[in-house]
Amino acid sequence: MSTTAPARHGPETRHRILDAAEALFMEHGLDATSLRMITTQAAVNLAAVNYHFGSKENLIQEVFQRRLVDLNRNRLAALDKVEREATGGRVKPSKVLEAFFGPALELACDTEHGGRTFMQLLGRTYTDPNAFVRKFLAEEYAEVLERFLGALYQSLPGVPHEEILWRFHFMMGATSYAIAGTDALQLFAGKFDDADPSRLLPRLMSFLLGGLRAPLADFGEVPDASLSDGEGAKAA
Image (cartoon, rainbow, N blue to C red):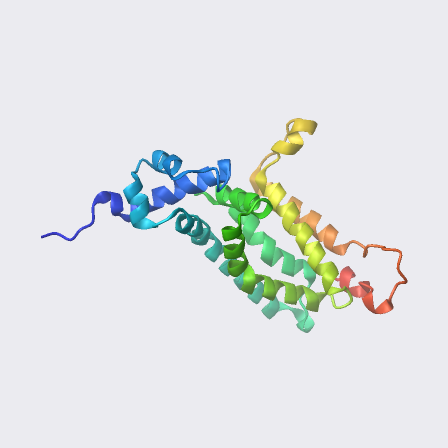
């Protein structure tokens, strides 16, 4: 008696479900996308979804994990490389940013294998996460953020950690918005002449580095010399 699983239980079916879920989650949001919508687009029945994932939450988790694990691995590998190559033992802040945001923007330029769709979904999730996804993403990012924030603290010793956290927060937001597309701005500014996604990386990196190098905010307080960005910011 054959123990071979039916075709609907094979790896190709699993990938088709993940692709359909990824696209629908990006278009409609996690909560508004039903399993019926996913099964219809993937051309499978509910039994196939239950066989491969068991629940909608497990499906959501695997949609993120199948690309996020590799993305964060690539980020850490890039940071390891720039730390090995650093002269004088200190990595330039610009190199830290390139190691973190570069792999994400490269993935966002992938229009053939779903990378762009995933990054648009990830950007949307940052601004409208449900409790389950918020907890899941926090766990997935824990090691990565610890490494990268630590590298930024070391590369900008004169800048308060709180200020670096705020700037990283702003950079994450700018990246998510840029990856999500230019549709919102086009409502007011018309069609962009150059929408080539491959040009997104140099444009956005230039913008992010400008934000990192900006003077510290003036809150009307008496300045403390120990908190000056000084040479640290100039080295970015």
